[in-house]
Image 1: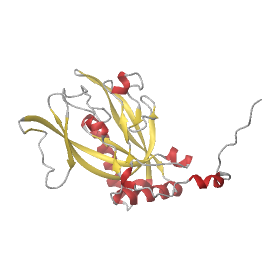
Image 2: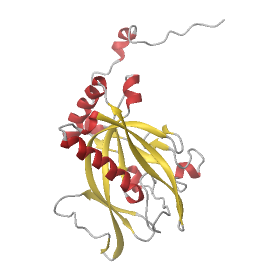
Image 3: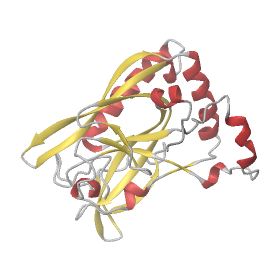
Image 4: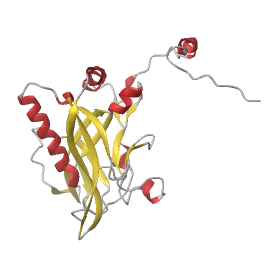
Length: 246
């Protein structure tokens, strides 16, 4: 004999409010996940737990977009960083904010006797409209550098155009996708970006909350992709794409 299981809906959820922990959540104690573009060298791909070209979340490893597919995002805040890798082996060396004091950093230099490569990186906080529609949403960060840096520049161009007409970036949604590339160094995937549509008031209300949180510096970004070692051959033999777990 089977029993019907009641679905937890907004209408009957109130009876479970006693299960709520009264301890306030300190936003400094949780991490904002990144959107990672899977490459053939990514550990999850090697373990056959993901496919190259997919976009996945860095914490839950949840699939956000299919191989060569796309996901709709609402970018709402941007920051630039320098990501520095050792030229030999692409091992992570450091990450620092890109400022007017260091924006002329050379692409290659010797640091503490080690040859390193410096990559300008555009990082965007974003929300996913699909998650907003489902009623449970948190931001992600998507990073554009190396061979995917052009996609970041495209997004910056849209941001500049919107600013010119007095509109903030989250007034538009964008399609974040992936595309295969190939050269004499091998095959790899890069991010693509394309404008989609106007955001709704519901979506902008969701953005407003998280915009305040990230501007206060009250949440940290999951940077585990920078410290997990994986190399990738791209347009340059020592280039690493965002999404690699190196």
